[in-house]
Structure formats: C-alpha cells, structure tokens
Amino acid sequence: MRAIAGGAPLAESPRLLPWRLRPGWPLTVALGGFPVWWLLGLANIMLVLTAVPMGLTLWRRRGRLVAPSGFGVWLVFLAWVVLGLLTLFADAPGAVPGGGASRYLVWGWRFAWYSAFTIVLLYIGNLSERELPSGRIGRLLGWMFVVTTFGGLLGSFFPGIQLTSLMEMLLPGGVRQIGFIRDIIHPKTAEISTILGFEQSRPMAPFAYANTWGSAYAFFLPYFVLTWIVRAKRTRRVFAILVLVASLWPVVYSLNRMLWVALGGMLVFGVVKLAQVGGPRVIARATVALAAGAVLIALSPLPGLVQDRLDNPHSNNRRTLLAEETTRSALAGSPLVGFGTTRDVQGDLGQVGGGNKPGCKACGSPPLGTQGHLWLLIFANGIVGTILFCAFFLRRFAAHWKDRGAYSLAGCSVLISCGLFLITYDLVEVPLYTVMIAVALMWRAKRDEIGGPARLHMLTLGWRR
Image (cartoon, rainbow, N blue to C red; front, side):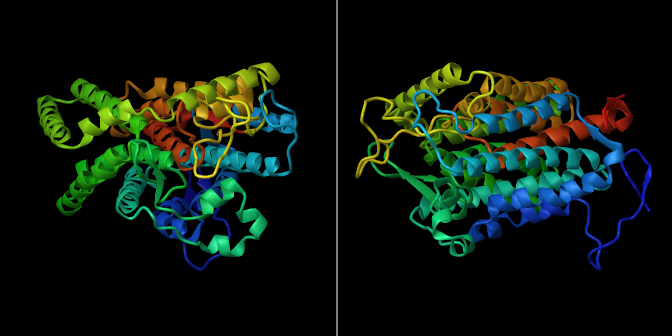
C-alpha cells in the first residue's frame, strides 16, 4: 500500500519491472536526457511520449484527482481545439486553397502537445511534495538551463554543425522531408541570418528554432538561479555562476530583442517582489547584484548591439503584415472556431507574385498563424479559443502574483515572459511545457500552504468542492 495526496491509501499496482521507479521518473527521463534525445532527433518526441506514463499514473488515481481553479477553462479550450477539426479543410481568405492529409498531421502534433501540457500539470499537482519534491523538479529545470547555455555557446562558435539523427535515418523520405518534422528531428546548432547586413549566427541548439532557444533560456533561468545558485552548495554555486556568466554571450549575440525585453521584465518583477517580501539583507544583496549587472552590461557589447538591432528592424514589417493578414483572414472566414491549423499565404505579403527566390530565404511569406503563438490561436482556434487560452494563464497569474514563496516568484516571472513572447514566438513544444510545469509548482506550493487538496477542486465525474 502507498498513500496519495490527501492521505488515502492506494493499492499497489502490479509491477512490470523488477525494480521500483521513483515518482517523477518520466520528467527525469525527458529532461535529464534531453541532450541525448536531441542528438537522436527525439527531444520533442520524448516529452510527448513520457506524458503517457504520467497519464497512467493519473488514471490509477482518478478517484482523487485535484485540479487548480480555472482548469475548467483549459478543458473547454482543449475541446475548442478538437472542434477545429471541422474547419481543417475550409478555405481561408488570403490562403492557398485546398490542402492535403498533412493538415491532420500538423493538427495532431499540436493537440498531442496540448494534451502533454495538461497531463504534466495534473501529474505534478497530484504528487505530493514528499513523493516528488519541488526542489528536484527545479533542479531538472536548472539542468535544462545549463543545456540551453551550452547549446547557445555551441551555436555561437560552431554555427555550421548539422547532424543526421537516428530518426532521420529511420523515417521514410517523404515523411522526413515535411518541413516541421525535419525541423524537430534534424539537429542544428544555429540559424544563419543577415539581420545586421552580414552573416550572423543565432543559436538554436538543442531546440528546433532560434526563438525557441530564447524562450527556453528565459523560462529555465528563474529555476536555475533558485536551485543552482540560491539553494545550492558552494561547489554547485560556483559552477552555476560561471555558467550564468557564460550564458550572456549567446544572449547578447543572438540579437533576440524579445528575449532582452523579457529578461528586463523578469528582473523588474523580481526586484519588486524581493523588496516587498525580503528584509534589509535581501534588499541589500539584490541592490549589489543589480549594480554589478549594470556594470557588466555597460562594459559588454550589448548596448552597441541593441542600437544596431534597432537600426536594422529586419522582420518588423513582414511580422506586422503577417499578423494583420492572419487576423483579417480568421475574422472574415471563421472568427469563432478558426481554421484548425496554419495555412500557406496566397502570393506574398508585400507584393503580388512574391515568394521564395533563389538566394533570398526571407522573400517567402511564413504561413498564416505563425510568428507568434497569439496569431496561431487566433487563426487556428478563433476568438473563443484565444480568450480561453489567455484566460487560464491570466487566472493562474492572478492567483499567485501576491504569493511570497520562491516557486511563485519563479512561476510568475515565467508567466510574464510568456505574455511577452506570445506576440512574437511560436510557443508550442518545450516553452509551453515549461510554463505548465511552472504553473503546477505554484499551484502545488499554494495548495500545501493553505492545507492540502481539500481546499481545491476535485476532478471526478464532475466538479465538486
């Protein structure tokens, strides 16, 4: 027999293996082995696959599952995503008409991720602190920051590295040539851009896109600082500080404006919260750290690069046109439900008859519903789906921003970054997976603080107190 959250005994299920796996092992496998999975072309796939054993754990505990307030809104959002199946083959204004079976594949991939987000939220929330300590999860997220940093350095100094993964070798040629599948199974260290008028590497390892690297850096950072620096032994703390300093190189040279803005927003929120809940010693340490950071930034190439980046807006016009066309198409063609998934633009955003040209990678238009998760929501799930998605995360931020706990501070910092990234980054996959872990850690910490699951919604055949 073993206990579940709330103290009720749970019958021991038959073992398939001769040894006992610790609670939380799917997270350890997925995140702890992330570099290996990336080299094999399995990094994103493993995060989805490990949701299966998490789901089986939840199924065994189905009589006593708890869910955070506002979870019903998220369930309605999932139902709205399913409703998008009905419009997958509807012609969208301004988009290429018709379409093939690959739309089911793209929709299914995103829905699998939304399902994984849901499962990881409930999985962490329904395991007690004793079963799966927050510190253990925090250290895994901190480890992912280390992996992100080394991937960023690799992309900065060795941008030309590309590998043929095991998944590429195993998949049929027709499947692995599908654009988004190739992106997730083909390991690359960097994207090469000409934002400043010359070739510049933008790190992306161990993720599929440079912008994913930026959002991952911001989302993992609070947990790295918390578990690898603030609450760590001296040896790990020294190593972590060196990693943090080294990570600034790819942050600066990634030319990632929204990452810079997000880090600034997180810093302001963190300082305000520390001033609010900390004593004089905490405030003094934060002031010293801020002063040291300001000096470091002033002496770095960042101010000059920021000015150069502002002088070369590069994709601003195309992003604006794409957002306008995405919104216009969704509101005109399917304002409530959306079109289920993205669509290729008919013609070109700035000129009729444009498109990809030899030697001009930026001449083609990205699909409608890309270049920002907000635009994906509007185009794929309509106004209703967009409101539901945003309402859930706003509800969770409102529930925790006044909390004094360390994991609430970290989680709210992640949600602030997520809100900023919504308009420019595509967040499905690792970023939103991390956001859901952040939400689960905040929710569980508050649940324990106020006296356990009895104060939360019980998820059975219906909702009850």
